[in-house]
Length: 76
Ligand SMILES: [Fe+2]
Image 1 (cartoon, protein in one colour):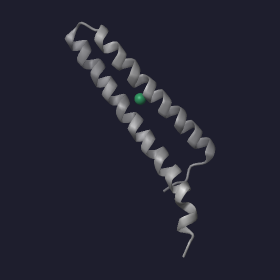
Image 2 (cartoon, rainbow, N blue to C red; image 1 turned 180 degrees about the vertical axis):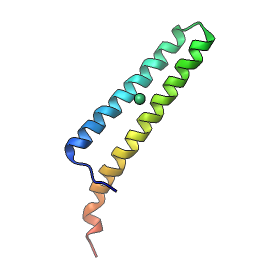
Image 3 (cartoon, rainbow, N blue to C red; image 1 turned 90 degrees about the horizontal axis):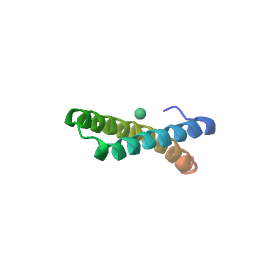
């Protein structure tokens, strides 16, 4: 696994925020849409953004967790 720098983690965090904002945007737009076809498309967009969010969050967690547990891995 590649260990990310603090700067990379900061940008990863910004990405997570943006994915979350996009997800919330599509979810809030849904009730305003009357056309069924467009509604389905926007629902798909919301799902896609949620997946992006979860992927980035997973990357962030892996790095933060590995950092957090690093002192224990040095104990022999
Ligand atoms: Fe996205």
